[in-house]
Image (cartoon, rainbow, N blue to C red; front, side, top):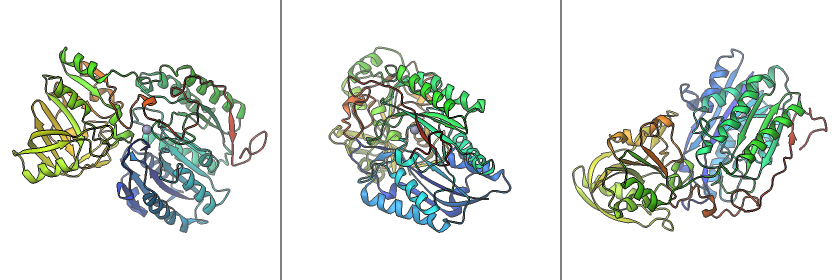
Length: 504
Ligand SMILES: [Zn+2]
């Protein structure tokens, strides 16, 4: 049995003015991307399942992954999509099934639904009957175009995400079941007109986690093949952005319909809790200055892992202007400042501006005279997934009580990887800025005295109303005042098991 494997993943923020480019993608072809079996990625999890089955021959094609960023440029998308599909096309008619690892929150200039395009082209190339199963991030947006091409899907069950490999394993198992047992899955979807953000999205402790626990129980009971809730990435402004409850079932469409409706209603019931609770910057700074540390400032608005530009200086500027007395540790993307530091060398003083490079409408460059404490190539590995980070020439700059890791490229900053890689331990500081909506509990929350979710400006602010959505369907909670919800289960099946016939 030959199973084609492919991957295309990025998450964008439509509100980041800096477009993503083809060069931001790490593209690996043929066997190159299946040689890393130990990673915590969906792809690695799926490959582990396939490898355990002696009768499965994996046909690797192409993996394209980029860190989060602005919407992919038209030229970037044209090159990426054509190269990606060109790697798959020669295998049409020669494989028995496809597993495709996707994120679901890509966006390109001129193509608001890149994953839908790829899946539509795959279906066109490989034919109407070949099984296709995808894995998706719960922040993805499952469009109609995507849904109509697939036979099944699995979705991350954790946020902050830690179950990448498990989601891939579940997808691979579902695909093998479809092939071997001749399953004919029905996908039931209930869309909810809401966007979720904030601490209640944390699955270990929040409202969303209780809903996900129901989905996991459904899966573990064996009554359904897959279940989950996609909350969408609220920063990927696309026509079909919303929350979606999804249940994949073999035969019992009624059970799936009831289960998806229950998941959707539970999300809707929690909508007021699933709104980011934010502290104004000035208040957070005043509170921090009045209490013993350590303090965490969570700057979700400039969360590079959600697609922001990473060049916000709002918090270090506010702390400096308020005369915050403690030792502050922060990160910023500013290639010119990093370059100047590398030119000057360790121990030198540099006069540079920090921040406001890519998003000048939100951030004003900050003039500093800083000491170059250390220099690096900006290489690290994410703590959670083990995948490499490349922030380019990087410098640790200090001025006053500030220590700022200054990077040349935007990389994910949701864990401590870039601090550690530059010889810095967050526990040595009184106040740490993290550009992420959340971190895993042990990384900061376990030992800081207080974590302030700060209401700073940025392309990925949890203050969703400030962003200016133009494309997503309205009304949408919490963007609009009057939003109502009546669950409408939609049934999709490519394999003709619907009581009322195929619904496509
Ligand atoms: Zn995600």
